[in-house]
Image (cartoon, rainbow over the protein chains, first blue to last red):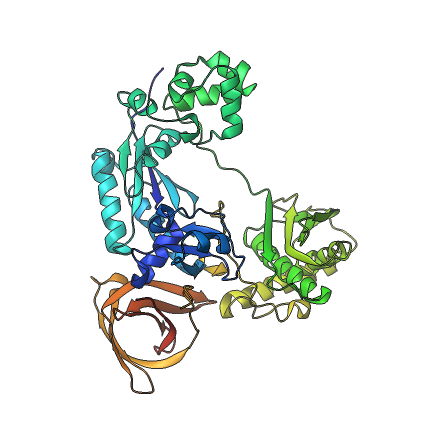
Length: 410
Length: 92
């Protein structure tokens, strides 16, 4: 099977949020640092510095548990504007090498050098990798580190990027792939979790090398039971099968309530705040929704949810808030976490005029005017009176999606 | 000492001595600042310089240290006024 040249460079910032905090605040450097969305006794750690990881701190740990393990652990609250700035700087550096750059999340991205101009395409991949590392140090800060992985497709490049953390640079080629695979476990491969490992074990595949040696038909019929088996066969041989981008299927936000003593009315105000926020995101992508999904987590860990699908599309705050309020009224109290998701998204409203068209047009103009004012004078300069007093419900870090990482949400 | 890196939002007007050069991180490097009470702080290191947006208004945030304490200085790009935003705990 033809193996393409090693044109894919994967860049991954090391312990991204914790490293950025250490970059910003030199007094934190070399010390165990944990990042949480809010400094509360029960806060959940969303990132940890390498010094903290070496002391056993893991992402997802509660603050009390982490402090018991590492008494001198320093907690820092997230500051999204810093992370978004570093993300944008990293993207800008990467885009200097190719027009085809895809950011996979806030802290990692892929450069496709096949789309690069000839004077860059002909350069050594290692030289480009080290240059990006150096530029990160000089253009963002001297504490910033990144891993660089080089291979012929995204899967192998990501694997190469994870071989030597932190600050590594590795290349997987047809020549060294077997030697590298021989040192790894199945779950070290990106995309193979414990469940997938069990499926592989069931057909006597216990190591990455055995997976590499499995024929395409077995992967299709025995492991994946679908065409995904063929993709795995190609992926393992350096053929690119992951260069697709999904459409936006939903827009959502969630919020952990700051107090147990909030009244029903105060909680509803926070739901409406989230509704206005997702409404703005929806309109910023020129999208319309047909469905609203509101959910809550109670203190007893019971998940409750309500959804409503409407025949006509909408994207105005008035419509989203009206439906969200109706749905929230059916949910139990008290709650710990609230969330809202807009779904069944589409690009254009139906062109058929309705009896209510003048009213819909008026709402549309009103929304666009308030969005323009908020963009000019700052978010929540104008908002509904029902969500007043909730300005502290700030946007936290959007894990996974990088669709909204522009300055409008900082 | 509470190990949390507590920061109080001060928004205190300050005077800043700064160097501007396209070769510097963020093209501007504060060297020292004076608070309204007359306290002078010599900056030994600039950590991160990043913009914060509020509508079309831009404020540049400078995370700096004097070797013992971390500070957040803010330069309002509309008024060109400097503010001391945060003063971190002394960790050492």
